[in-house]
Image (cartoon, rainbow, N blue to C red):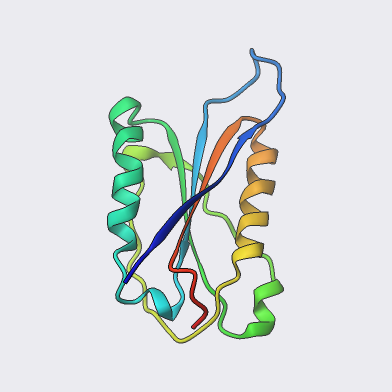
Length: 131
């Protein structure tokens, strides 16, 4: 019942200092069936606790992802809009034996961060198992 939290990137985008936004934290949460008995929300709380303590209004995007069929692993993943850390809420997940589009989720978060023009941390919460 091991969950791995991987800090994939610390993205520093080169915007002039006066135009740079504050750092956004992207949480990519594997919502496939293999995560049903895992404590992903506990890991998220550990990640968000110091962020919220330092700045409750720091932006956080919490995106749950999965694919119903293997061929859907190459379809775009929608990234949730960032909200203040103290307003970031967990979702109730109905787990199914489905697939984990890690690459598409990561690509979507990177593109979202680039579009935002600021600095971003991207965390992947997964058990690294395919259902």
